[in-house]
Image (cartoon, rainbow, N blue to C red; front, side):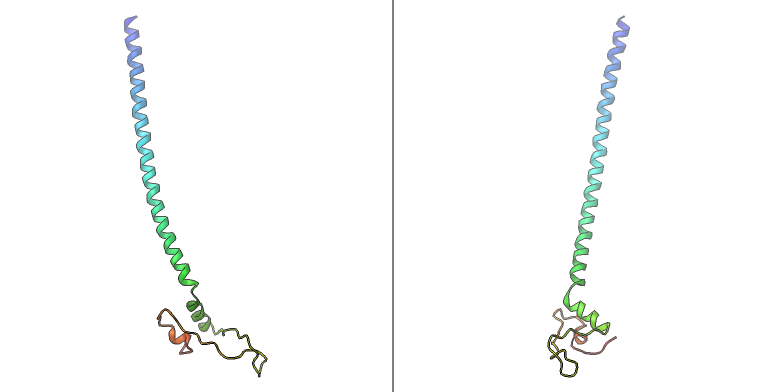
Length: 111
């Protein structure tokens, strides 16, 4: 009977030791996953910042005006023109960012 009792104590001790090792393994895995998620979050935040900067660049009035001129569009006129009934004077438009498109905005050569 003593042999069975010793065997039972050893089995319980082994089971407890395995549980401790298993819990440690789970904790390390969770730590690695957390670190990986934090790196992914940092990369996504950097990507978001790039996207926001691109959005700001794309929606700038100067860039939109340059694209409109390249497409042959004209600025809408609010006063009547004598010959067509619309449009008064041409509004002066200039690039404020010092870009190479300043001459295009000022009515210079088109590509």
